[in-house]
Length: 330
Length: 275
Ligand code: SF4
Picture 1: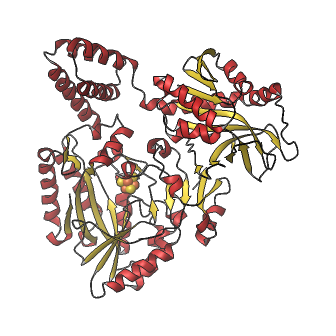
Picture 2 (picture 1 turned 135 degrees about the vertical axis):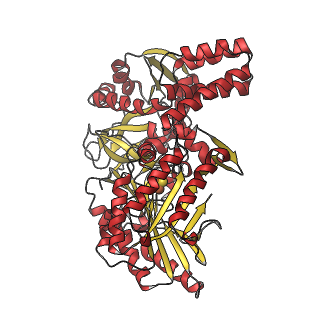
Picture 3 (picture 1 turned 45 degrees about the vertical axis):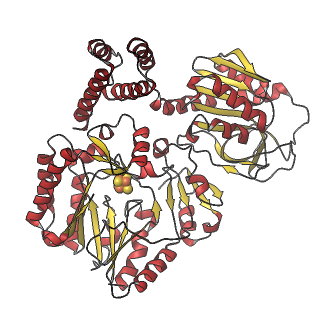
């Protein structure tokens, strides 16, 4: 990837992964900083402006690297955790909460993967005897920048060696060569975020089209990888029930049901403060204007607008998948 | 709108000429110049003066918010040749030791450099670092009006270890150094202004809000609601002429009806656009 500027924390500059990235970007201006927060956190930055040409920030992830998910977010394991080797994403989905959560659209990469893996290992040891699920792709896309980050390549060997620890790689990317180059791992799920083609076209900027994602899923399924379907967030477009129904049929035509590890369904939702920021950044965005309401501290669709669509999608998922493989995030 | 900030009048001279600006007042020792969608302040030397001049100019014009702010001036440099220009990628204050990292998401023709803002002139050059006396004060003050991406500090090297600074400014030479980069500065400022336009509402909105406030007695809260809704409507409809809105206001029976009919219009347009 070509960056015009790379900010690097002094503490991580000599890390082999930082050096490899810096060496592969000879044209970038390298700017040293003490803490990445000096560049990433100042309030007077405009996420939308930066998104047109983001810089890279290399920083050492300190403190807690593995966190518990909120109670409602899970896939039926005993414990669920998430971790972020990176903040921000190559893609630019208009509904993405990152644009409201962070001041900056610059990518922050934490190259000290060994510390993350150690923390994951400690967590698994702490809850010995329990099934632990680790989610990656909460603050970024897990695979979109694989050629630079080598994230999957670096983390998969650990999960291969530790069957009690499950990993979900959440993605919209079709960068699957790292996965196809190796044998599928029983306890790793490749979870694709999906929406109907028309929704993807109007809201998921820079992301691969639905057809490309389905092709990637099919290839992985054929190779024996477990696939997750993440229909999240559902968007209340005109004729949504018909559009989502056709979309689900396309999915069933693309991959065998046996390959589907799980399906989750999520609503469009954002904490009110984060939503306000998103709305300020994109005042012309119809998504932020139509049919939304504040409820329990969140901005989400009016119940009347969304419930029939949710039910319809749920019914269709239930027609194809066992109930214990379907999950809901609201 | 583009706002320039310089310390010296000889730094300002090429900009005033390029944008055909005229003297339009001042604040204390700071002098303001203005032209078509452009303004400039000559602040005097020093970080504090730069901050005061920047703030004063910004406060004097409502259009200062979300506008482009450019600090143009000379610097000493510990590596570059005389006459080379740099854009600040990091600005540190020698007084507080703090740093700011200006963000620049568009292509500029200049190299980036760390700029250290000193409180007094110095001939002790640091490798790869630019020295000036204003950038930090300017930048902090301009952040009150615009986001970092719209604020840049462009410095032209007037001295280095081979040609240390003279105590006496050669004003013509300084103007000439700036003049050499004037085309790039003009084009950079215009590119930046395109970015900041995203958030500017069309001028007719202010006029309609004023009219409605006067004729219908809108409260302060309703005024804000109307302003926001008109902004949404204009962006969704992309209509340049607000005829639909004028008709809507003329035919509505009450303030409440104006706002609710406008909301219906907006919801309809949003639904159509979202598909
Ligand atoms: S792919 Fe996910 S993380 Fe990336 S922009 Fe879209 S929603 Fe956000």
